[in-house]
Length: 511
Image (cartoon, rainbow, N blue to C red):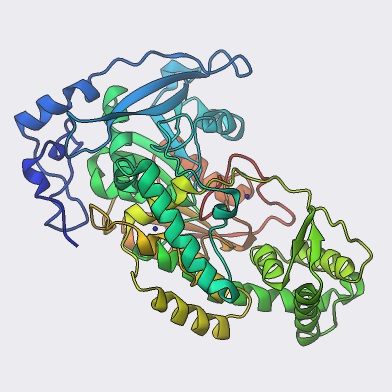
């Protein structure tokens, strides 16, 4: 693995009622999207979607026969449901204990931009029997992604690097404008509607089609943003929601990335202390200052003579980009720095990271990010912020504050959702998470006032479920019984236990 004017009043549009409970607020009102009463005109316009019959069939010859797929039809633009339709690919694994069934458990693996069609297969292996028997597991590729009607901007391989260093700022501006122009040219009629709010609406159409009064949900990383938006837009339709490694809804999306600058510095300082205490093993220095110097020496040497990693030369900025998330997992970071130091010295010039490479196409990622929230339009704002953050947070500040295609995107058709509700929710969070830091999980907890939070003290890595028995127990109990923990809980980290690279988390901005 790893962006005005409001639309016309939606209360008078058919988007106001997608079926009982599928309502959205007028855009001129609060962006928190409180439900409004449906109108008969709206209900009639949306009946082809909410009453459609799904044609389930085996997903593939290489998957179990019980794993079924279908295609859900949804409006591209919920303001005009009689207009263009798009496909959302969905999947399910029915419970093998119908008498124990509570309902459906939808899921999202992150991104934005991650496909989730195969996620029920993974959850089927991870969930204990007492939880698995309670649900039909439902997966889906969100609109614009995977086997759903995709959004493709026709990007080149060079286009598909999302975060870039300050040293190439002028080129970064040209790149950002070029990506925005390509997306507008190739998919201009679609990109305005590939947003988190519309994916939440798709989820509620799916709920109605499945004949469910409520849905339960497991979402990780970006999936926590999607889950939180759903609870805000459809609070009476949210049942048991587990949000794993949570974003801060108030930071969507530029500030959610920009926070990686200061958080990487915190992780780096922790890493230097840990590595100094293990100098006998790693030989990077017996004080934090000496360890820090060892790393920055590698960066400087890579700038003079790039290190070959998986056949590609890596300069100093590339080393910083490669290792930023590694510093949140101290042992792996120490091993990686030793390998890079050896490679910089010429003893391992063909360094192979032996890690999976995700789909590099960023079309869906930038479309969601740019469609969800407004970004500064002036490139000089990004230059100024990058210079300031590079000075304060030298490891990654310039990358995190840099310009994105969203600076040249058309303005979003809706405001960002203000999450502020009392829907019961469980949040699980590692203390040392590189993508969604602890403070963003805590912010989600404050905004979801009916939530409980399980924090894994000294927990490392992005994605908690399946890595910590204490946190897993809380999540499983909630999904099985509907009862949240009586209070917030702190769990101890499980040494050496991290989520393995898989469909969780998925390719995307946060993964």
